[in-house]
Length: 72
Length: 234
Image (cartoon, rainbow over all chains, first blue to last red; front, side):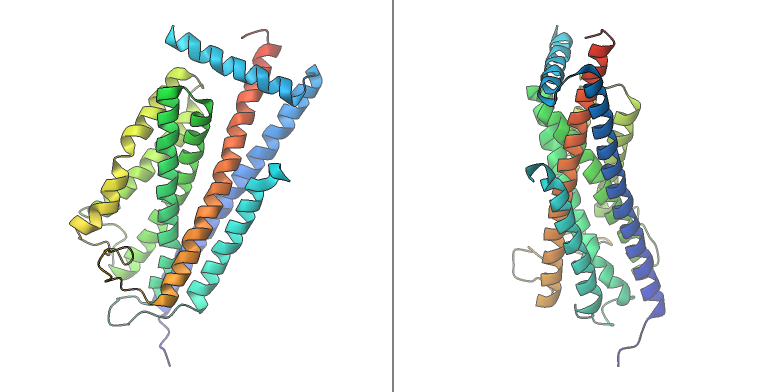
């Protein structure tokens, strides 16, 4: 029968708990940010009567203008 | 349905990661007690290697995104840059953390400042940390993006250096056990299978994460533009 090395098992547990916590925090942060930005954007767009396609056009024009300004 | 592909990838990747953990702890064979100081801790390897692998993919995405922004002014390139930095930071920290714990168990010290592999990978993770924190603390603009893209481009030189480090200077970090090029891989087939499932799962998981991150950056840009137009600015 294989001898159980308690010390090694403790290290193993600490390593996996740390990584599980890392995965959970990372995923939670991303999902919360995604939901929050979607809600904020929907609220702002509906308040000024923009639909998603129009808002995309505004964003693309803004990025292009910023890029042009920097190269001037 | 199409809009939820990133979440589906995230879910599939997560299931695969948990399957890897179960198989790594319960199915994969034990290593020889003569070859390791702490044989039980060796099972850290089933998440450590895939997370390092995923970090390398993320650093690759960071490099491509940085190049696309810097040379082509591509908004998609900037989104890739942002997604790559966040994914490389998360996976890099997981690999560093698990490596430190394994080092403490196996070597009696969590870090060896003379080991090239440890230090180059640590530097890569610090670079990702700098890029994530820097982007959050700076106003978004072309100059900011250029600066961070330059770091992304030049920092990538550490990736091949990290990859070949244990092939040239084997100090503490174990040498390669797969893709050695001379069929001298020391892994048993069950171990290889669990490692393969882990690598695939982590790959799917970070692709899902990076797609969501790109969507968030896109929405942030849209929100900023709409707010500017509301304020009567550009």
